[in-house]
Length: 134
Image (tube, rainbow, N blue to C red):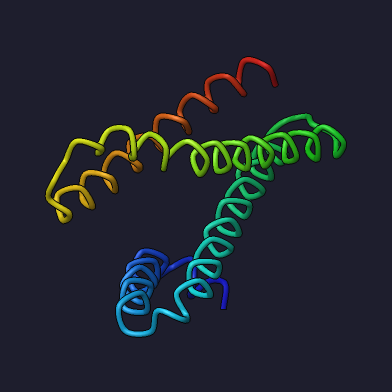
């Protein structure tokens, strides 16, 4: 099962995104369930990739298990910090930047784009700051 997911992860992620949009339009009462499911799936993939990367480093070099666990813990905390900061700051930045737009459709697309850019910027900033401290 895991090899199928790892082989077709791009197709599965696109299908999940389309399913999430379809649920928002056709069954709005299930939208929160799908959003939480998508969040936990993306968090699981992020944690899995962190553990996989650190296990490769562990097998290559002279690192003990305590150092491995420390690196995994701090990298997962960095990912969680980036997710939390992006989730808290993204809507405020989008609201500030799209306040003067009158057309609703243009405002929606601009807010989505600004939120994605803010999330990417926050992720890069957290990665840079986290690398300096850890």
